Length: 86
Image: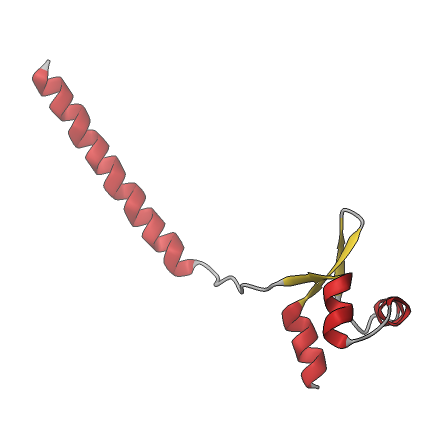
């Protein structure tokens, strides 16, 4: 019985090493994720010092890239910074 347990443990160790090696390969190939903050309408209006109607107009003219999630508009802080800087 003791030898059976040791064999199973050795098999588990081999499996663990294979999994770790696979994870290392995946990690090296992974595309880096940019940590971007998403702002809602209120944040953007405060940041740009504009009114509701101005924000609506910019969004409709597609001058501000945005996404609608669950009925609420969100704007990428990186995209806004790019637009503001010119």
